Length: 97
View 1 (cartoon, one colour):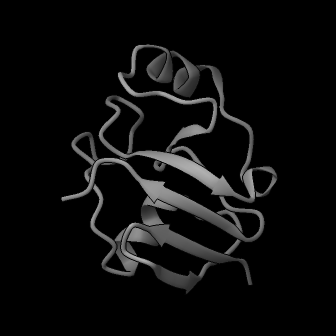
View 2 (cartoon, rainbow, N blue to C red; view 1 turned 120 degrees about the vertical axis):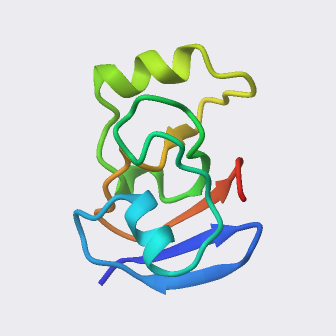
């Protein structure tokens, strides 16, 4: 099972491959905003991948469009609702509740 570590909380959990970072966070009481409910209609679940970027599926065109207008975007920015886990990953939650 993949391991996902969320910063700044330091919470590390086992996850099922194919689950989104948002679903994993919510199932494990990780504080993360998700105004649109995980439908790629906002950017409140913005995360920065710190390690294991290759262990997430590639962003699709909808996610890339959202990220293009995001203040504070980095080359490692992803939306948690769109990022499906394939292996171990560490992410920093940018917008937490």
